[in-house]
Length: 200
Image (spheres, rainbow, N blue to C red):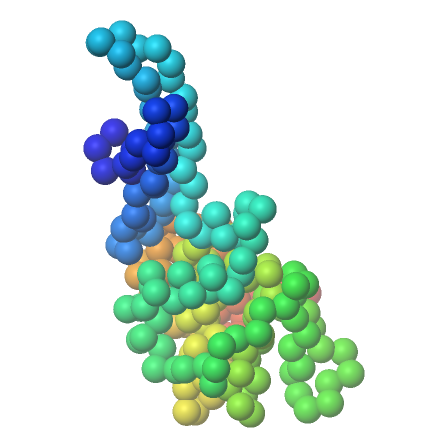
């Protein structure tokens, strides 16, 4: 189909398929099926189909598995909404090979909970577990924004961070593309801000 990539002849028997760009404004990308047919004199000789996966899926769910590149991609794609946090990490985040990272609730916490991401309020460094990248790209963007809120000069609370996620649900795409994640944000916001519906 038009705009779904290009074919370039390499040799008499081989062609290179280059997939199309994923638009920066596309919030709910899906797999795209591309058909390539060999035609000679108006007669189709062979046909192949390829599935082109979204960039976030490529970096997190395939053998490529490169969470740092996915982080860079999400920061680029959702740069406009992430800028509204007013925060900035003190450097590149560390990305653990584990699903979650320990996040002390207070100094010398002997039993810190294991969460998808954690910001050190002391130096505004952040650590992500792979769990922060395994959902939709929208949830990942919202999670990155949540952590950025913690790095504002006043070191905002969990209530403020979840409220930012809720208030920017359309811009991060969780409203249209990941309602399950949005429901979790609402539950966490109600709990941290009002003490309503907290897990027992």
